[in-house]
Length: 401
Image (cartoon, rainbow, N blue to C red; front, side, top):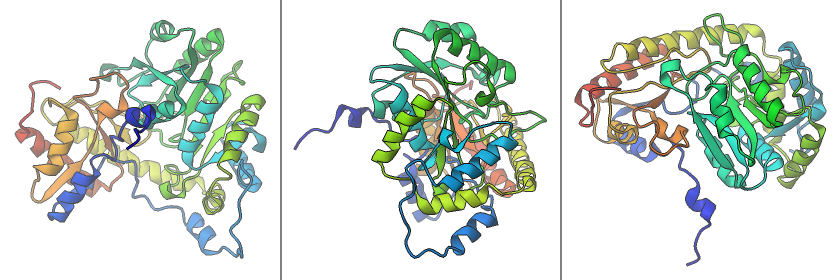
């Protein structure tokens, strides 16, 4: 039998999804599983998106333009203008989720063996996208003690080599919920300008900022307009993950012309998803005000509960809907599997994402888990009770988080 590729061997399993078989088995055994492992909100999708699909009057569902339906891209421009980001439809390539958009950018901007610097922990699939393109991730650690703030500029400078081509951030961050300040983005601007690097920014959680904080986009950093590539998505913003519509955005014409060739090679993004996404752009601000209020309640429910558990360290995230606490456990992969295989509290248990998969540094994240506070408060309280009881009896418990 022929061997699979080296990339096939190197491709990591998703920390978000790899424990699904254990969760399925637990459910078959009658256990209720609270899914805090995946960013799948239970917030209703805006009715305008549902109506746009119900009211379709198409005889043929055609290919769209490889960059996406023009009217959808124009609606996106209108949305960004409301957020003080001025772009044109030619600055946008729509992808099958932000995931495809990131793949386009990595393949367009970096050669095999080039390096991309990413503060860790970071969204697990950045590892997979880089392996797909033959690119090397150069991680620099952020710490739970700082709430996972941007690492010092000195750490970036030490990590930069002749192979470094880009820096990647997620803001607000997945998996930590950290929101980068304007001052931190200015630090990145200086580094990018000094070394003439690309700055990739995943801003899919832009709307979800708490405690009076404000999101600042890399698109508004002066002097590096041709260095910046933005990634965005309708999935989390409008609780429409299955639509699979995201975007790669840049004012760099050469980058966008090259990326379009990758987009042409896969023909076109999903037409039905674009129709729904276009309708979503008219969603009133009142929708977000209500959703943000709900997520704030959920965040406080989780953070307060975690901080009341002995040995747990839990920062307060300022954005997105994730938090990455440190637990008094020996191994987060083992703990998360044990929760599904061997533990239940009154017939209930929790599915978490072990944080090891959100690091590129071997051995990092062994005491941390990512919690997605995407369920109703009532269910989050039950899930937190399960975690509290689990930590009391987990055989691999340690004295410190």
